[in-house]
Amino acid sequence: MSITIYNDCDEQEFINSVRINGLLKHNMKITNGKLKLPDIEFTNIARNEKGVIVGGVSGSTYLSSLEIEVLWVEEAYRGQKIASRLLEVIEHQAINAGCQIAHLTTYSFQAPLFYQKQGYVICGEVDGFPDDIRLYTLKKQL
Image: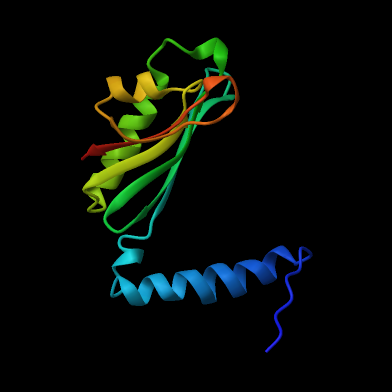
């Protein structure tokens, strides 16, 4: 059998073949279907008085956990507890969906201290990036 590695692939073909019918199918089998529990995506935004988005948070749930994928607040609006409120909202949504833990990754130049103030603990660290930048994995019991 001859296998050839290609670097040109349609994104949808990759998603269907590798992510859905490959990895997801395998992971669902290994976890007896629990991987998709509760299988909810959350997106919450903060708007200013003019209706302009000044921040937001999004995350996905699986294995009774919430993975926070994005949390951002416009620089001019930082220091007003908007990020804390967004984080609190998504955590409550996850709790109501049956999640027991929240987790995320953040770089050292982003917000590890912010998350620690919100009750998250560092459970992983990757170093070796330029300028002594580190990537942290944090978690919190909900």
